[in-house]
Image (cartoon, rainbow, N blue to C red; front, side):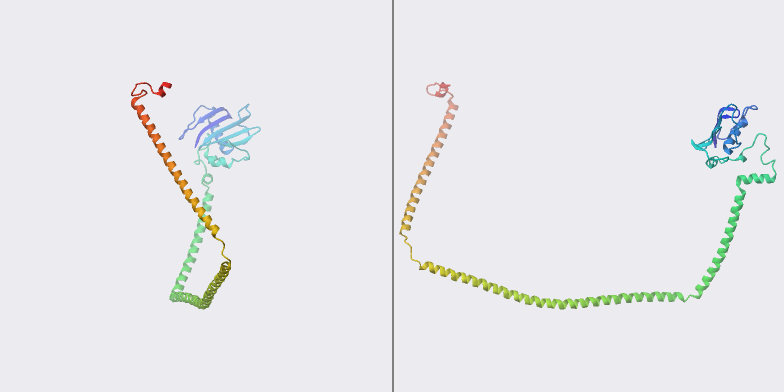
Length: 343
């Protein structure tokens, strides 16, 4: 829907800004004030007609018409050096004498949508052929005829296909009736195939079990041989341990025999003189006795020292208690004690 038109230097209009009503807009005025020029300006943008630059205002270098439709802004500019359309500020130049497709899609208008001031009443003054031509331009009757023809052709093809399908279906039903015995045979064949598969599984299971039994026999024989070998090895180990124990006993017996020989050599030697050893033993006992006496004296001296220390501590405690009781003066004469006089 057109909502606004702005015209610059188009025929008698210098600058014109016209807002259109959403319902109906009526332009009134005296003659030669530019009412038809507004329609021509809109038609110039929509159809790019008339061509050339004869509608530029006298003394001006270029013309521009801007319309707002459905949220888009379409502008047509023409001067001696430029000829272009623009849509939402995007310039379109290569369009020759036709209207750019992008603009045609937005406007969706054509020459049939316009009627001049002095044109005859639309369609009422035209012949039947002219009306059909105009109507065909609006609704494209040729396209409708083409679509209807294609629909009829497709319908014929579908009917032929349906006829063929019906014939094949009848043949299939007849074949099915003639092959009723095939269904039981098919079930028997399916059951037989199932039995064959079951037999194949049982055969494979028997072969697997036979392989396991043969392997078990082989493992049993091998285990028997290993058991006999283990028993022989155990006996050999037992005899080896016995031989080792006998060897150890022989070794200990040899050591004992050697020790007895050494003892015999020692016993055969002459006895040494032990008188000096006896004297040294007596002297050692005397030294031990004197050492014990010394230790006793030292212990007694320590005891006496401990008793003196305890007595001194008791004396100090008594002196402290006396000072606390009588103060710094003697209790008998009342004079200061020696230590305080010196102070």
